[in-house]
Structure formats: C-alpha cells, structure tokens
Image (tube, rainbow over all chains, first blue to last red; front, side, top):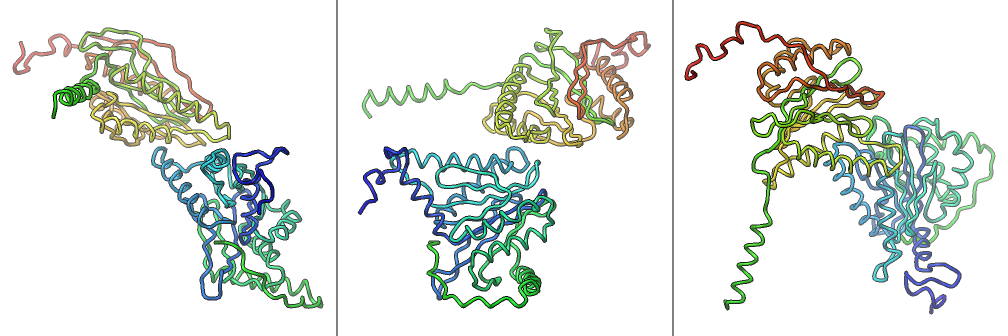
Length: 261
Length: 245
C-alpha cells in the first residue's frame, strides 16, 4: 500500500533526509501536459500543450495573465494553478494600488515560493501539486522563473516542465545561447519548436498549443490562434526543406491523456 | 440585564472612547515648502522655523530630507507628524533595500505610497497634519508632486505648499521654464522665499535649499537672505485698511 512508512505525512522526515510527500508533489508536475518558457533581453514567451481529457471535452487553460507585465504557464493540478494565479493577481493589483507601478517579477516569485514553502512545513496542509513558469518584464528586463511545489524557485534563460518536457529541454539546451539577443519572432518560433519536441511526432497544430508573449511595449497576452497557425506553417516549410528525403516517421497512436485535472 | 453585565457594557464603552485619540489641531508647525524642476533635476526650499501656534518657537527645524537614493521630501505642517512620516519612509526604504534585487522605489512610488497613507489616515478621522512635497530623479525622469493632509495629490513643474501657494506660485508661473540652470533655479527660489519672508509672519530668515539629480541629494547648510525693510509700504502697513487701527 505505502511506498514506505515515512510518506504519509508532509512534515515527517525519512532517515535519509527526504520529505516524500513533497517529492510526490513534484511528481504531479511531471504528469501535467508540457509547458515551456524562454526569454531574450526584451521579451519572454510562454507556450503550452493543450490536451483534452476526452474527445468530448475541451482542454484546460494552462496559461494565465497575471498583470500587464506578468503571465504564467502551469503544469500539474490545474485547480491549484488557478488558486495560485488568483493569489498572484491580487498581489500585483495591491502593489500597483500602493505604488502605482508594476510589481518586480522577482519579488512576486519570492512571495509565491514562500507561500508554497509553508505547505511543506504544516501537518494540516498539502503541498501545491503544480509547477509554474512565471514570465514577466520589469525595470531590469525580461525574466523567466520556475516555481515548484517544494517552495524552491529558479531563474532560467529557457525551461520546460510537464510530461515529456525532457525533449523540449534538450532542444532548448542546444539553442539557449542565442536567445538573449533573439527577436520576438525568433523566440516564438523556438517556443513552437520546443513544444513540437514534446509531441513526439504528433502533428503540431494551433488547436493543441497556446502561445503567449510579454515584452517591451507589449503587455502580456495570449496570441490568437490564427497567428499561431501562420507561424506553425512557416516552421513546416523551413523544416520540410531541412528534412528533404528523410523517412516519414511511423504513425504513433496517441498516448493516454495527461493528468491535467 | 443584570448589574454585572451592565458594568461590563459600561466598561466596554469607556475603553472604546478612551481608545480614540487623534490630532485635532497641529501644535508645532512649519510653513511653506517650494519645489521646482530645473535642467538636471529638482530643487526645493524651506525655512527652518517651527511655530508653536503663532509663537516662533524653534529656529533649526530641518524640513527637507532625502528618502532612499532617488527621492527628496519637504514638509510643511505639524512637525511631529512629519517625523512619524519619516519613520514610515525609513522602514519602507529599509524593506525595499532588503530585497537586494536591483529594483528600487523611485519618487513616483514614494509619492503614491504617501498619498495612500495620508488618505487612509484622514479616513480614520486622524490625519497626518502636513502638506508634503515630493521630488526626485530616477532613470533620467524628473518627478515633482505634492500631497496634502486629506490626500489631495498632483504633479506639476513647480509646487508650493501653504502660503507659498498664494505668494510663490504666481511668481513661478511667470518665471519658471524647463531649462533653468542650477544658479537660476536657486535665484528663483530665493526670490520666492524672500517674498514669503516679507509677507508670511511664520517664516523665518534661515533656510535650506536642497538639490536632487541623477547623482543624488545635496542639502545646503542653513543660510539667510538679504532683506531691506526700508520700503515706504513697510512704514505703515495697515494704513488705509478698513477695520484696523
């Protein structure tokens, strides 16, 4: 029934110095469908894979606008993600009420991480089962952070979370050095390429991905589906040229839908 | 209701009444502050008098203070309330610095924060009895604003509080321009301060001028203005005024 006797309670240490419940929460992030983020000096782009749970249902929303200068992409328990995005929105709006200026991204991320940390140290709570990519713009330029259920946070040049995100990470690791000076359009293309990697041969269309941008002179917004499809089409043209003569990948039956409930 | 309950209720009422103490009128006050934008930043002037009612009680009250790296505040009104505001701002700047993340509050943020504090206190019927002038430069952007004890706030190219609003603003409207040099700015402020010294009975002839630019804040040592009291209009000031003797 249990993996061991130390994993029934968030606050109980294992003799090896681990908190199993926190680690399980980190696993929940990997169950969700993929979300990726990347940034240049001036722009940050988020993208996510939208998978519906059944043929009959629509997909869950995975990218949320927090304020004009901040947005998030989530992987894991969507319900937890929505609760956290409500918290982030209220922190941003309170800050701009008091100071009439946007909340620095890094400070918001620290507040969020502190909130997540509390859940790892209280017997009557559970950790959030969601990972957040926080993209935003402030005085010091564009930023991308990853917040995880353990209460840790990291700043990234580019990152991917969720199921099969390793493929996207590999792509991003190969190309990240050029991102700093990338244009907005190049970032969007790289975001879509990274998303494509996580699909493992499944066709990339605008109906299974969402892309959002924030940057200098451009408030955070989700790109409209038509524009996304146009970018995807332009990718395929360049890719066809590259792959000319390459063997068609064998058709894979779609895997079970991710647990983005 | 039995008698014990009645006593408790009475005590409750008593303690809540005792708990409400508020500023009903100011005690020690400072008079006008003037602030202007000039070529490289902001200049501010204020005298150093502290009036106890109409008595000129204190002569070395500093009413111009730096706030963080980018801002300068000048205050007229209740001096102890100003000191409380300075405590709030010290805490604000301390917590801002503690993030140590390269972000910092500029004059606009501090001004807006003060507006919230002032308006909040007046809504509790316990105002901070001041008119504040806030100036600063951040990222090449000059900022000059004011907020009153009831939370009225605005920005302008030149600002004066109290009597200065009546006596200095007209001069500033006529003579201020965007490209004032430091020397011309100081001259203009001194002209205003001299008028205030002549006509504002709570002004004293000991003032400071503060400058804030991208480089930081400098506040001058106290000094006096040259005055000339021999004008014929000063000989018999109430002559011809109705109801005077």
